[in-house]
Image 1 (tube, rainbow, N blue to C red):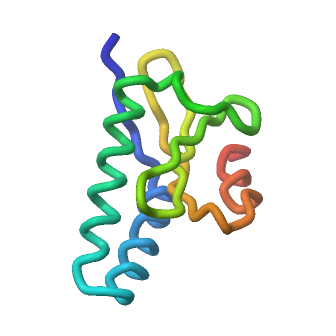
Image 2 (image 1 turned 60 degrees about the vertical axis):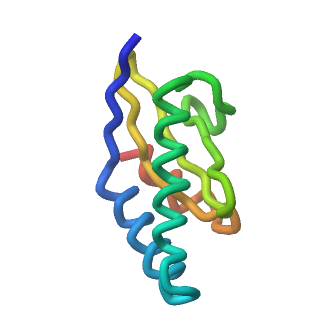
Length: 100
């Protein structure tokens, strides 16, 4: 089955924050962060139901090398990424996103 990936604006904002932070830490580190995210997206596309279910129908794919989880849900053949969240942050912030 072929799935379509949809990244919400709120997730793009999370990614932009991460990119900015890692680039401030070391030049080029943000590129590594983005590459790990892309790898995570591909993993999700290949096995969208293969990751842990958290908080109702939300799933989390933790990425390699960085303390981030891709929070998403699957609706038939569509995958919606709600947030790309640092694991040390409170889940309340992104949980509000799924209520809207």
